[in-house]
Image (cartoon, rainbow, N blue to C red; front, top):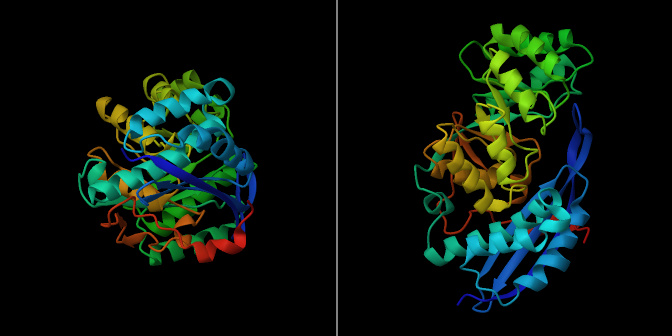
Length: 363
């Protein structure tokens, strides 16, 4: 039995190089990184983590440290899916989804790190082994950028190896959003895939109007046009829109993802292993999408998701997020010609550079 001996939880607050803005969450000056280092009695260590947009990290830390850790000591780390289920029910009554899912993610990812190390296999093979690469796009958090800075930033991303681009929408007027869409399409040319993200800022009616105006610019998807819980509203948008609809980063249970796909009629589900209960939760959503003949995409934490996406036969696009978690690892994302490549080392492939993170320790 691979008994869990200890769990070390740490909270880091990591500043961003500049303030980044989206339509509903406002300004981001930093992100929070919550790590869980799970050690077995035989000395094997697995590292898991989650992140926030700058708020709530202390609550996630506390759930891991004071609720999950005491319950997990002495448990068999090999029983990953069983522990996932038991962790969720342990804190279900006070925190279904939300903070609970972030906390479970920290532990679950660490358990998968251990599982892969014990098997001597990289995560992408343990997750399905479809191939060792996936398509990737750059997801900018750039609503506050003036148009010239927006275009300059995109030029830099294209030069760094990206072939596909996403920008934020939600300016004061729809005319301004369409102006930015037109300028970006003109910059990147007609062939590159181009996504847009409204970050939940529109009504159903405005979203439909926006999709009809942006259709001429060959938009790959419109992400989160309205609030995440309005699944009937998403269905109305999807049925009226000439642009495919994406959703997922604000859905924190596997059941919400089911509702988005079956009721909301979205075309691109985007589970995030940091807030859906880790790798176990992510795989449940990805396989649900496969059964429904839908592709799966991601939100954030590209350093981990690259392996999950590489493993899945229905993978579409990996998001390369503007929160640079991978810059604090020993293997930043490997990108070439719009493709991201999964690590080949046993484990999740995410090994943090603790020396880099040390100065940002909060707890």
